[in-house]
Image (cartoon, rainbow, N blue to C red):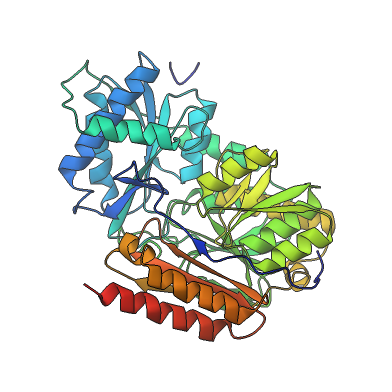
Length: 459
């Protein structure tokens, strides 16, 4: 197969505490978003990445006699090495590899489906620091590989893979242009809008400014000079403080921050406030007439209350865009996402796309009127505290019955005026403690974080 071919209402009843688990006990290397780790250290050693390419190549040969894999990367200094190793492993199994260069993750997903490729692969660790990296795969529909496919690739890792044909490699130079054309199909007229873009020194650093300039906006680009080590450093969707300051000081209409691989987006309104994923879901659901929305266990209760007051359904999925997508399909809905700004517009794309989400959010504003600051104030949020606790063994701490007892006690203390969520990070050695409450959220969250820290110290 070739390349051509809602309003504030009384608080809802508190939910029971959520214990998020490691994604699948069947998988050793794949987490919620591919294989992640510090580049050069297990599991992302050169030897492992070569074997992963061989195993993936063997799997894709089962799907197609002449497999084609599109391969892109972000701007980390380790991405070149991992790209070469993964490509070599794939080619040793007779796979045709098409290099897309530096391109946002959702661009890989789009082109995989658009070009009829067997699969797509992205080398990135998203919002993580530059020392980390990762590899994720997309299937021919542009969706991330299902758990079963990742389990099959892991099983193939344990086998020897002699060379099966000689694969070839090419540079698909039209990748950025095709992705840009796709985005511009959904862009509103932004003439006269003054926009600040935080490109996180990442995968959107070239295509991001082009999209908004061609849509008519006056663009000021920040954090757009990657050097291999500055990706996400004090910038991007996880660190929007600098962009907030720029928007206010320069008198911009709004700011837009992306993460390192471009699948997330966060806005800054003209007053310097963070307009995050929950705000995006509320605004776009109303503008586009969606019957319901899928959030996650991390979505603020304020969003749930506001949507239900408007007669819209709201469902919570496990954290991770693949689980949001699964729930969207199950419920027959088309809009879902996370507070982090990972939003899926299923009518337009198969995965979260920061640039697409930004354009559709601005289109929603034009349909409904007002600006981000107006809509920020129309969605009251319940106070939320999120603490990240670094631990040595996520599974052991999460499985300790003393943590469950502490969570149940915290829920009793909130007495129906809030909720607690404790889950392990899918990409880092962290346990995330989140508490939402009308009052006392900080105190409850810190007490739970101390319990986690104490349990981690127990040998």
